[in-house]
Length: 362
Image 1 (tube, rainbow, N blue to C red):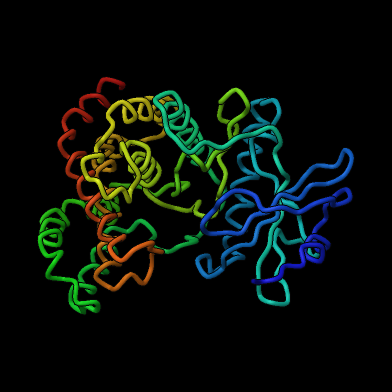
Image 2: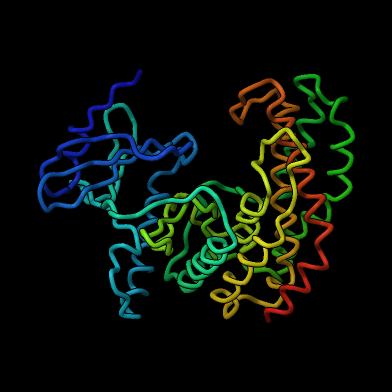
């Protein structure tokens, strides 16, 4: 097991107080995260190892986050918001003035001030879906006028045209010899591929803008206070230019499925319209003032896009022989694929109802 000298790493940052304990924090799949407990009145901290296999340009990553958190703080100050330090992340500078430190083993680290008396949530209810929609919409709204351009921390992360290209390449290679058993699903995805790739076409035509989005809008990527109110959005590594569909559609892909994305019992899978209505109500309350008509018109498309995209990604990996996603058993990616395809089908049955509900809110 890899040995981490946390004392040496923390000594590279301008933290206050005496460190009493460093212990694992959370169950994140990408970065390694630790709670740094200090003595006395000094704040606690969060130490995080950045996964530079996924985020390969750490300097760009941290620059994005610095710009975003500074801009949010400025907006909160302009509104005379109380308790600002609990509503936006604070990063601690390293001795060289950067917000990250590269150790002798080429590992990248950063430190944030720990926000006490907070909780995260894993399950989505109609009540929390409304709050999440409002919070993520407000997050986008605060970043509409970011003063400098941000880079893509994962280029083409939500590019549907690229995902279809990757699927077609996997089909052509058929590396694991699995194509015959999934050909029906391949044909169904190809049937709708042109429609699902319309965001990229609208962007090239100059009709659809890119905005600064979170791009990983799960309920566990925000902090709640002890009363269940949203304090702030966290996990900012994927904050970058994208279509607002990324934030709106991806939350509903996980939050509005009646079950987990890898549940092999397809009878459990389905679109939770109550969660959709609650999240959409909250989202439009805070986002409607900056959204263009074409963005609003395509919100139902966004709800369908993300189970479709994730289905394509899981199927691509299955055909390739499970080279990207971690699996727990041989057909794990196949079960994920079928799950997301069922969800996509059910979402499409709600196209007209979703459009009517969104229209009613406007």
